[in-house]
Length: 103
Image 1 (cartoon, rainbow, N blue to C red):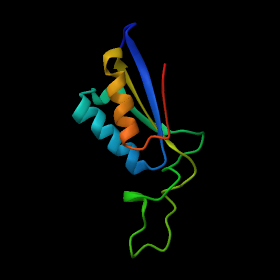
Image 2: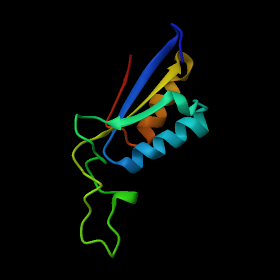
Image 3: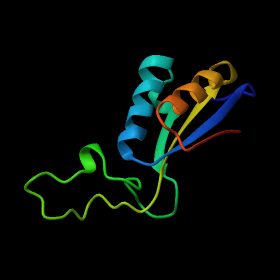
Image 4: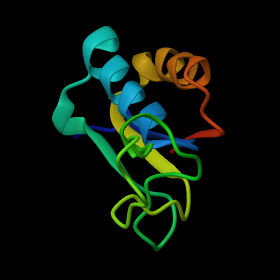
């Protein structure tokens, strides 16, 4: 998305489940194009968040998992028009974002 009236809004979540839910809300409820939504670890290490949740939780048959490292928070960011920033802040807040910034 390009243009001077666009901003990048970034929210940080404790779990991958919350980040995934945020992406769904941005795309399905606010109407942001999926190609304008990005998900990444908040730090330098690959991470599934800081808390076990959803698909990260071991099943009854798992003794331990090596693929779902819990070493940091998850960031969800979206490039949006300025008129959608308030809706993004509200959505991220409703979904338990730890921090929300816009630039």
